[in-house]
Image (cartoon, rainbow, N blue to C red; front, side):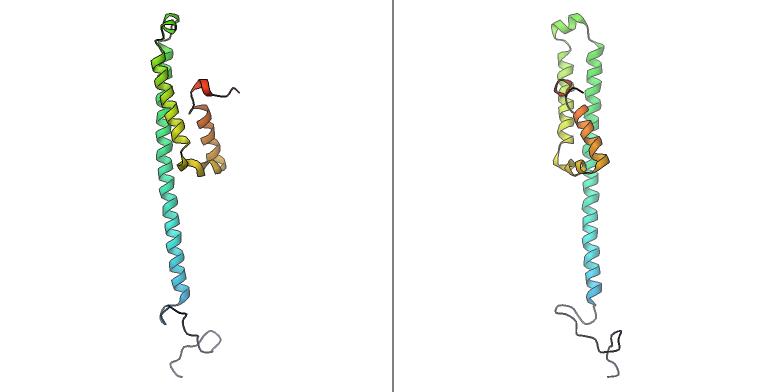
Length: 140
């Protein structure tokens, strides 16, 4: 048995398990599979983070647009204008912008963010304070 392989204790090695070739150790194959699984999971997390960032940026843009529309309505506000209903169209547009932002921030894509302590708190805070029109906000 001059060319026979021996294990760490000096005895003969056992034959490879079913499906494994004699030259490929099982440990190497399981490490490769583990790396592949970790790579796929990491890639999915990166993809989710990118999509969440885009979703959040779009929501922030809608909030800024709504705030600008409210400022524009406030600038043209007068007693006669209130009686005639003139500022109602910019306010409706602002309401639509805030509703769109609320919809983006409430999407299932961002549900995992609600679980995270710091991001979830800021997401929920912006959803309740900015994402809803003023008439729907809870006092306090």
